[in-house]
Image (cartoon, rainbow, N blue to C red; front, side):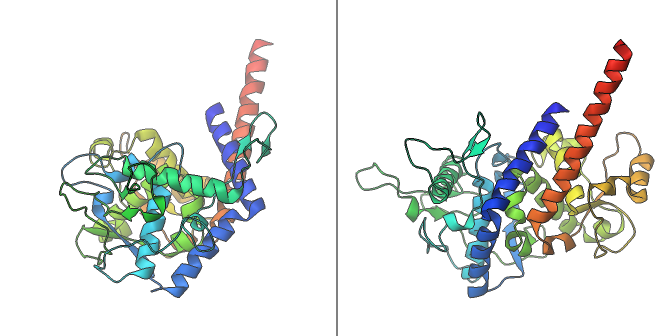
Length: 355
């Protein structure tokens, strides 16, 4: 419980700093400029191989659920940028610098360097650090991670200068969702067409434009994308009784650990992006806040679920139209208060038992 409280406090601190510097607002504005100047896609199409590989190997999505860095976020942002700019089946070519207005680093929101001893951001150092410098560093680190997935699995390729030394990050190439491939010619990214089968899934553009891609953590994004895939595979079942994953399928087919899955579902429900399955329309207004945990339907979903049966979920998109920063800050603040109260009650109970 202490770890959960600490993690919630850290996340709130980071969101607070990004609110102060308007980092998410600035990144979302840069993305909207790209969207409005381009093809204005209502949805971004992802090849399903990003989420589950047909050969049974671990999918790229779960390889990018990492405690540090922005690799998963950056890859999704690159796909968004490509689909704003390119036609279906048109090959990707880098058209942006790493720095400056409208650059790759302009698409990323971060909180900056934090000094835990003093409890301050961006402390003075011998080597000057600025927000733009740190964003570029994060982008380069993300490209390193995407390339180091393996020769055939790499989601990005960064060339080197002719002398084999300096890495030319500004000339990176984006690969398809399944990776570079095993051929001599890399499988460079092309925009996929949406397909009625399970070969693609779609993500509303507002996931990017309203800041959700910036504020959700990697395990929440992975959980959300997996549930979106399930909901689009089985649309009637999703609408009527919800979708679910048994532990074996979750672990072996999708590579998601139990704690990441359960925490992801819980937080996504609190943010209003999921709900326990119910009969009401999917476009109904989502419940406001983590107080949804005391909603009667949610209570019945927990009480009536058979032991060892997985929860059934429905993905709802209305909340994607709202400001992600405001919603997440509000919900995490409430969550922290609940955790603090529970810790206080436990401490009081322990003291009374030893009196």
